[in-house]
Image (cartoon, rainbow, N blue to C red; front, side, top):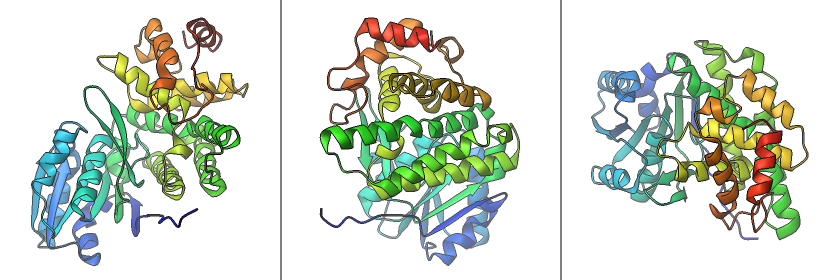
Length: 347
């Protein structure tokens, strides 16, 4: 095997009120020449305004770019504003972080990850999820030089987002099973340390379901630190394998089918229930854990038609054909999909 670089953030801040120290953190990292804040329409008021104030107090020049989606068009728009001296601060949810991450990688500049929700594990990983009208791409980027996560802001975000982040973390259980299966059957490279870190992250959530509550800063801190460790597993592996398997392929299939998909983590959580059943594992424990953190466990709760669940199961193995999972090379039949969804009470 060739030598491979493992990218990780240089500094990580996960604390209440830390967003107000953004300027000083940027100065300590010598990222104070020019800052481009990439944010969303909603997260501008939620987080970007405080970032701007903090940078102004530290006498750091800044510019703001608001993006609506994680598309290649958005990335190009951001890149047009980047100079060699620019540092990009991604202030927002998963889409904003991914656009900032890939834009900075393409232009060869530093990137600081500043999540305003705990709904995804991409806050620290070197991968970005980019979508357009027809395809989903997991693009290689680079890890942020720093992560600044204000747990007060995250605690005050809609609890549904925190629940979705928990469900996304629980999906690591089946992602690692898929990775192990691909290693045994296809001789795919496998990292025991990355797999162990991924499973530790999933167990952190299932062990703390009673401590995940709405509006509680301590809950936000638990989930955010766990999302960070899951992102580190991805960095160690050099791929999303530790945190993305058949359950994510099911979710991406739903994204293609539905005009308005549910939250990524919610769909992955339901996918995890289904895939754990296929493995003959304790799918009821998975279901009960997802329910305990407030995420949906069936089609009705997620607002998705039963037929769309079946269609997503049938086509899931086509989403990333190069990624071997429990779905195999040929996928699952429609009849088996109905039985699977019915027995797990997803439909």
